[in-house]
Length: 102
Length: 219
Image (tube, rainbow over all chains, first blue to last red; front, top):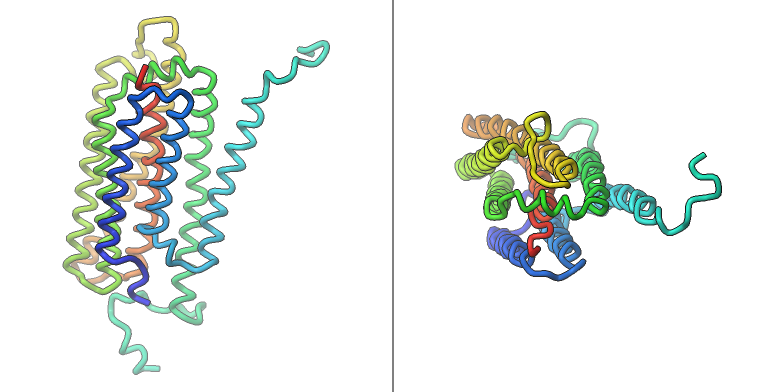
């Protein structure tokens, strides 16, 4: 009960991984990868966030109820990002309706 | 009952009467903190959504703005904040087993690393002020994209400013906890729940660093 969480050794390993990923994302920013620059940067950030959440924040060792609340927080964020993007990114897909602007 | 209570170590958060067991109370504490963090995800998420939409429209100007930021400073700040998360995790680890001296030490380390982060942030802000890159009447930028670059630095100050405010609040809470722990009054769950907040602020920076500093660097 009192020892719910990783060992000191695992904490150090997670920190090493986080540091390595931070250096990797910085180095990759100077290479021209086209649209993949942003995608890879965000994937690395998401990986780092997952490591922090699972190990530093002990969610990996938490019960299902905690998982529901953690996942819900990011689901709301996905709705916010997804619905906003579905508007702004699709605005020029169709021509404006007849008589626009009203 | 009296014997069962005597077996509970003094640093153990006591069982409040609305709960049946410590495990249940612990889960309620954790879930409650995550509900708050859910609102924080959306708080920063709203600004990040707005930033992303404007960046997709004015990507050239946002690249120009991003190149005004110093990647080296940003990368060092990232490593410092990640290290502060490690010391925070170790503080929680010490609190769980009631090692008071280690707990105080790791809390102080976390505060120190957080303060160094804020110091670097202040140095950056000062630099932006000198370079006339603070949005407002003093803002000055050469070229046709000046207005959109100003929008970028507005987002830079809004996002990093709110993040820095969260850090300040975190440091204040950690200072109180460190003082209480030094006086021998600490409760393991309190340290753990505060740790969740600190790690969350770290996660916000994990996203802010690539979004703000690492955009269009190869150009």
